[in-house]
Image (cartoon, rainbow, N blue to C red):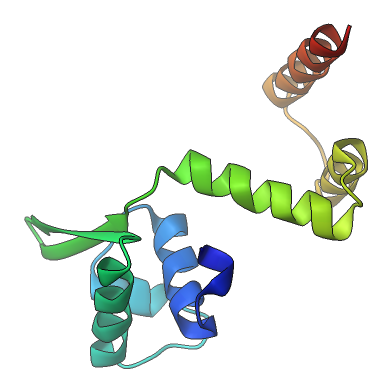
Length: 124
């Protein structure tokens, strides 16, 4: 459903996902091309009506968070990216992602090795 959102709604939703939870002011400040506060409130209300955003009262006022689990959103987005840009090849996508980083931390290398080993065991 996220890919069918209008551009500005998607931008606000993706920003909120990145922030995990935020007020309208925090979402507005994090946008690459800021909107007015009322425009951000309107877009968040539309996303809430679509079931993508939850509004909660907090200490600093009203805060919003993505309704779907961020992990599920990330998984879906990764599947679409791999299918679209890497012809369905997770290995090609992983190679491209590794090319974006300068150096991996030892714990990241260990996690990648475990993931590769687990994937190899699943396929065996």
